[in-house]
Image (cartoon, rainbow, N blue to C red; front, top):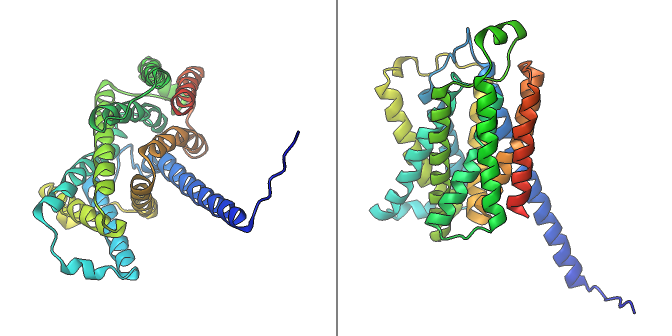
Length: 322
C-alpha cells in the first residue's frame, strides 16, 4: 500500500531553504574549483623568457593586503568595528600567527615550483594534499578513517609516483622537438612534497582555530591577514626588492591576485561553516580545469600515460568520499 504524506507549508519552506543552501554551496564550490585550477596556468602565462617576471613576495603581500581590506570592509558593513575596541589577548593573536606563517611559506612555494615543473604536473601532484590533510586530520583532530578511505590515500600516492616517473622519463630533446609537455625535476618533487605537508597542516590548524572561537568570521580573517601582511611584508623587505615592489606586474598578475584573495576568503567560509573535506573535493576537481586551461592556453601536450594518474585520482576520490 502506498501512503501519500501531506507536505505542509513549514516543510515546503524548509525544503526551499535547504535547496537554497545547496545552491549557495554549489556556487561556492564551483568558484573555488575554477580559481584553484586556473592558478598554475596563469602563473605560467606571466613568464618572460621562461622566468616569472615579478617577485613572489610582492605578489603574496598584495594578495594578503586584498584579503585584509575585504575583511575590514566586511566587518565594517556588518557593524562589527566595535569589537576592535577590545584588544585581543596575546594567546588569541598567537593562534593566528601560526597559520599565517604556514600560508605565507606555501604561497611562495607555489610560485617557486613553477620553475621546476609544468602546470599539470603541479596540479596532479598537489593532489597529495588529500593524503597529507587526511593523515593530519586523523592524527591531530582524532578523526577516524574507514579502510576504503585509507585505500584511497594509497591510490593517490600511487598516482603521484606514476605521474612523476613518466614525467622524469621525458628528455630535454623530446620536449624541444614536440613542444611543451609534462615534466618535473627531482627538486620540484621535493618541493611539492613539502608544499603538500604544510598545506595539510595549515588547513587542519586553521579549521580548529576558526571553529573553536566564537568570533565573527570577518574579525577572525582580520587577525589572520594582519599577520599575513606583516610576515610577507618582512619577507619582501629582506629580499631587497622593496624599491621595485610592483615590477613585472601585468594584467594577468592582477587577475592572479584577485583570484587568490577570493579563494582565501571563500576557503575560510568552508573551514568555519563546513568541513575540510570540501577543500579536498576542490583539489581533486580543479585538476580538470587546470588540464583544460593548460591545453587551451599553453598548448600543453598530454602523454597517454597522463590518463593513468588521472583515473587513479578519480577512483581515490570516489572511495574516499563514499
